Length: 114
Length: 116
Image (cartoon, chains in turn blue, orange):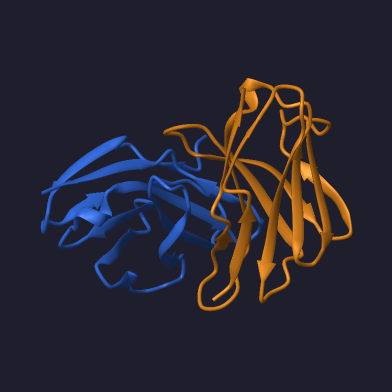
């Protein structure tokens, strides 16, 4: 079974609007971390936001927030006030406390329209 | 913050030659380095895990003799693509367990390999 599922291969959003990128995960480990990375066309992986499985509140980092619904095993990324520079690939990832490996989703290509 | 410096960023080589990719951890010691391969518009696939002072651990399906990984010191890990062929053309990226304020990994900037 897929550890991380991103069902949106491509998304479009109008500049200054908010957008939600979906991510669901699968694990039996009670302790895990969820991450979102941005990958622009240049290729580097840019860390955006982290959510721990025991965190009571949803993580926020500037314009990025993570809508963490533990019972549904979802960790959607919300980008508010989209900017043209937000156009990139976005990857959801998970690391289980019992292991060292990072599991990545297949990514969502976000295009911000002026 | 922690930085992983990856070189070269781009390389073009002829079929049959070998290419070495270096990842250096700056200002921190990386006892472990993860090597990923990424095809266009696809996710990152873990190829192998290198550990300083011991043999690398390869994922299923990854040819050990083609992708030689060496972790020579606490700050340097290398991936050598031996006898490269066009199908080895890809984006390779390394990462080390993060330090500092979050629990993620620090990624190198990636190497785009083209074999002609």
